[in-house]
Image 1 (cartoon, rainbow, N blue to C red):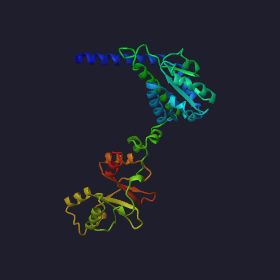
Image 2: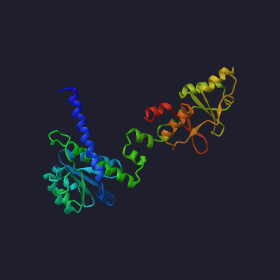
Image 3: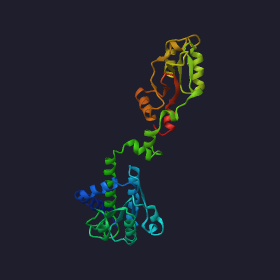
Image 4: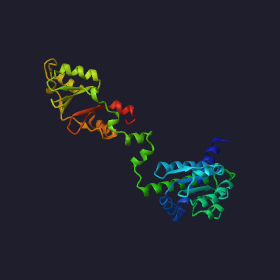
Length: 323
């Protein structure tokens, strides 16, 4: 077999599956709307079931639904016949998947699902099949041909089923007004979850870790405080603890350029007043945005009285996976 033959076979597969998905798009109709309404009215969860390749696709559809605002899980039809049917309640909607619509393991549990009172959505490639006729709503996932040259291995049919499941999930997401923050709550360990959930208070340095000196402190002594705390800056506060300004490595370079006497000059005469501050309840991602815009590496966290309550450094954001 020549290299060109590999590519020709691969492209043929892609072409067939593209055509199958396009066919699916053209026949989307009120049945999808009915399925969405059934699920939105559901007081329980969506239970997805399917055997073989349909089961693998069903697992993914259940995961997509669950992560986008529709509580869902997958039940293997064979296991359902041996106890797992107890996971299904009358308040649930069952999405049963079978390309032929005649899979014995799936059909075996349908009467029991009906007896429980759960609603049934069938997803098959045959609208005239037993599963299709037993369903309150039937979703047509049929294809004209499989991409398999033998027209045997599930290929185009599984692709269409997956796309149809995604279409259902995204229609429900839109209907629920599901937001990026809602998504983050389902993915707290991911990068998006961290960006949308992590607050400055979760990662800031506070208490004795905050570099802090009085306005009259000589620059030399302030430098010792900066070195001890390791943020490349220090806050300057008044007698009431309110923030007056900050002194950074950049301020030090400018002071040296001007010939400032570090032994006698008060830090208050060299500080940057009206420095950029944040509050502890702000998102850590917002702190990163401010740092990038202002080209700074640390921010002072203040309370309602404008007293420093913390320091957040770029390194903290990097370690938290925000940057």
